[in-house]
Amino acid sequence: MSQNPWYYKYSFVVFLLIAAIGVLQAIQMMIIPEAGYNLLAGFGYPIPEALSIEPVGREFTLFLIQWIGAILFGSDFLTAVIALTAWRKGEKWAWFAFLYWPFLFLYHFSLYRPGPHKYPPLFMLVLVVITLSVNARRFLATDQVGEQQLTVNPQA
Image 1 (cartoon, rainbow, N blue to C red):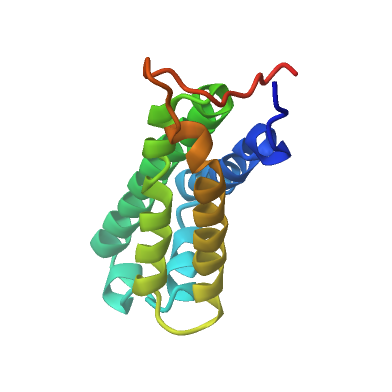
Image 2: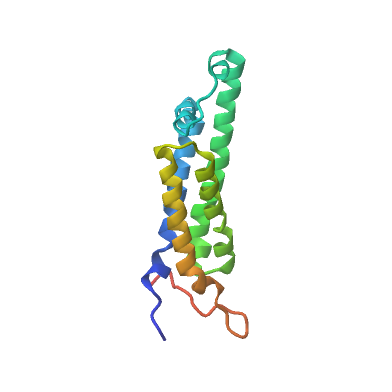
């Protein structure tokens, strides 16, 4: 029996990193929605003055930032759960579920205006594509009966 490559065992850490960054950012947006103003401005899209000064516009903007934070929290928490369970077990559906991340990072990269804030999604895009690529054989290889040939025992 051949030994599985080290990256089969530890590749889940890439998705835990994504989840941790996202959960921390989401918590900040839910607890301190004013921080969202700086976040959006940093991406090249400052919030218009009418939405940040007028009471109704400010209230709506803060609500929207908290709402986005709740969505981020849910998706990143699910990423952590999938990484710690199905990905580590080598379940095929986890690989397909994580195909979401390259598209998200590519979309973020295309949305942001030129500046240093464009580099993190590009870095994460490359990291996720490499992680999914080197693990493709593990998740997609099957034998005649349809069971996966390559698995990793997370307890090992």
